Image (cartoon, rainbow, N blue to C red):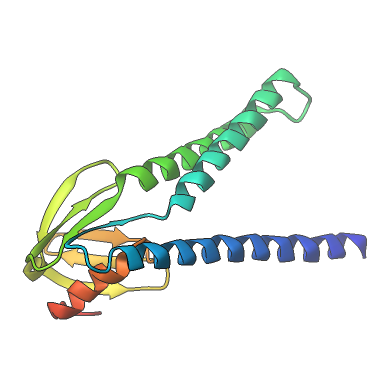
Length: 172
């Protein structure tokens, strides 16, 4: 009985935290969209909270890994350390992703610049887009032989989607 109650509480707390994170993202996105309404150059980027989640994740698992090394016990095996390193690297990847990934959008121009996670710049003409598929967790742009992925929670994304609609890019 006590264990199932703890599971229910854990589920509720997890849901509440995730709900709060998405609320903060939506509120921040709305505020920035209002600030950029009249600008010609708009940068679509990941929400700042992604940076903080990645940093906290990396620091937390790094601290746990260090504690595991400082105070070893019989459960501290190599595979446990490897799992901690995977989570540390995932957190650092999220930090990198939140700082580097961007779309530079210039209103009235026939192209935009997509900067990938690794800093590679792609200048893409709207006419080169084969289709745009808007999913619940990812937006996919198909350009001839490449695909580009966009987080649907990205800040200023509404301006980019508006440009796609105005240029009548095929929706899948």
